[in-house]
Image (cartoon, rainbow, N blue to C red; front, side, top):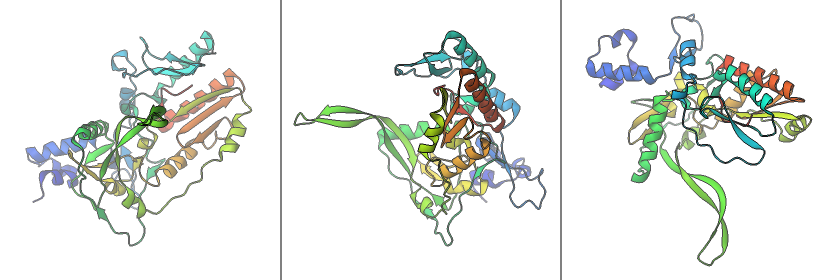
Length: 359
C-alpha cells in the first residue's frame, strides 16, 4: 500500500471517496492548492494534447480576487518618487496607488483613474490577483534532449537565519497555488537563498578610500535549475531591437509604462512537465504549477505569449519588451484610448499588470 500522501496524489475522483481520514486530509489539501487539472471529460479522446484549466479561472473567482474594497487593500510601501511623478489612488484613504505624471491636471487624472477603475481586473496588487493566462492560449513545456539523464539533488543545508526566508516564500506561493506538495519526481533541484542587491552607495574602506558598493536590502529564495536547464532543448525566440523600439516611441508625446505582475507566474506549466520543477526544502518537497523564473526557456515562452496576445497592437500604439509594456499616443485622449484597449485585452486573456506601474 502507498503512503497516504502518495495515494492522494495519484488517486482518481472515485477512489478519493473511499479514503481514510489521513489520506482524505491530504486529498483536500491538494485540491485546495493544485491549480491545474485535465479536461478529460469535455475533450474528444483522439485529442493528442489534453488541455488543462486553472480552477480559479471562473467569473466568480476572478471577481473575488479583484475585490477592491478598502478592507482588503494590501499594505503598499510608498517610496519617494523622482521629480515629475506623483502618486494617485484608485481606492479610498490612499489605497491602491498608481504612479502618474505630476504635470497632468486634475481633470485628466480624474478621467485616467475612472478608466483604470473600469478595467480593474487587469491590475493587480498582490499574488492573489494572478489567476493565470488562459491555458489554451499558452502553456510552458519542458522538452528534454535525447538520452538526457535525470538528476535528483538532495536538500542543501541552509543558514538557520535564512530558513525563515524560505518558509515565508513557501507559504506565500502555496497559499496562491503557484506550488503544490509532491512526493516523488525524477528531477529534483536544490534551493538557494541569495541576497537582494539594492542601489550603489559609496563607503569607506580600511584605508579611508571611497569604494562604490551595492547595498543588500534583503534575501530571496531561488531554485538551482542548472542541471535541468542543461538537459532542456533550447527554444530561442527573438527579442525586439531596442533602437527600433525607441524610434517608434520617440515620435509621440504621451506614454504609459506598465509591466506584468510577477509575469512568469501567470503562465501555466503543462501537467506532464510540472514534476520536473520539483525542489526540496526544510518544509517539504514541492513542484511548480506555474512557470518559475529560473527555467532557461521561460523568457522565450513569456515573450511568445505576449506577442500572441498583442500581435495586432505592437508597432501600432504599443511596444512590448519581455514583461514591460509601453503604450503611446499623440495626445492625452489618444493615449488613454489606447491604454483602455490594452487593458481590455488583458482582461480577456487573464493577464494581470502591476497596479503600481507608471501610468
